[in-house]
Image 1 (tube, rainbow over the protein chains, first blue to last red):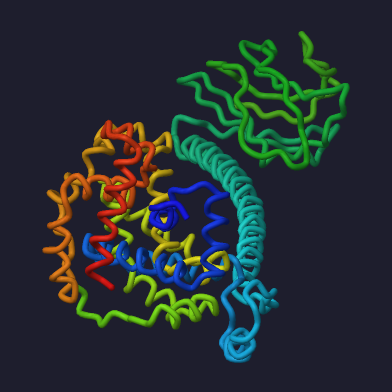
Image 2 (cartoon, each protein chain N blue to C red):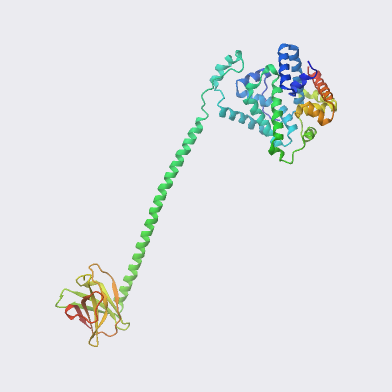
Length: 276
Length: 183
């Protein structure tokens, strides 16, 4: 055999053909086997003499990565398996197929994944339900604001009415029913100084008018009727409505006219009247 | 040094335990060989973090491909040192490693590493240091290039510009020197 080939064999610096030849020789001749072992031991001692201690923290990292590798590959045998298997292993040749124990480690990930999925679905359901409730709340806030606004308007309006009733400058003129409609009555608030005229809708007792007709308020000024505008009488009317201004009225009267009002009052349709 | 007692088994016990994939085999494997293997890796890769990664990869590969080891073909350490050396060389040749400018040229590593690190001298090997120091420099450099750096003897001949036969002879002489001491 070529001189130096065993050294190169141990160093791994050899072609596959030469390698196979050395191995064949080594299996046949114990002295070649011993020669190889001696070379190996020499180099092993040389490596040991040139050893560099890795940092202490690396030990756990490396060993943990080996343990993780077991778990991933499902190759890590259970204790029972090991104990049963060691005896067989000793007398059987290498390369025997070993039945792998059923993996327990991986089911953790399945459960973890399932748990994540459940949590995700629950979260989505919660978000959906919260969103619906949030929208409801927005609707309620909007409707409350609207009602609040309408209350505020009503309060303002009623404040205005109270001011009118309390204001001594206003005269409250109570119009009485004519023979044509004896049950009718209504009240007009009139401020001669500011010329303002208001009709009190709440206190009004007039038959409801139809679509073609409207009531028209007249003031008698210097013996002549002056129109102060039209209004509708409804059962549920509230508040006071402002009419056209007049400074010096001798009387107020209301006639039922065609919708929109007329130039001159139809005397036969006079419902209520009051003179000042 | 770690205050924890290191685990040590005979090579036969260790091989048997590795074959059975026992946890104690992993511990013993690391305690018995990590420093020797790290010595080889560190001479190829000077970047400590990368060398540590390669040591980890080496143990993972040893562990996972242990069925490929056959005691009839050689000693355990011979098989393992080949794995460590090949992984380290692959790493040095890989693209991302080459991009790191801080790496030293391969040729300079052997002396560089010995200047940079305190190599470990085990008490039972105290005498060896003296002996190895007596290796002739021209033998030592060839042995280191081949054993620690994975150079082929052909590459060494080109690198050092000496005839192939001379490389082989010096390599053989160096190993004989080591053997004479240990056998």
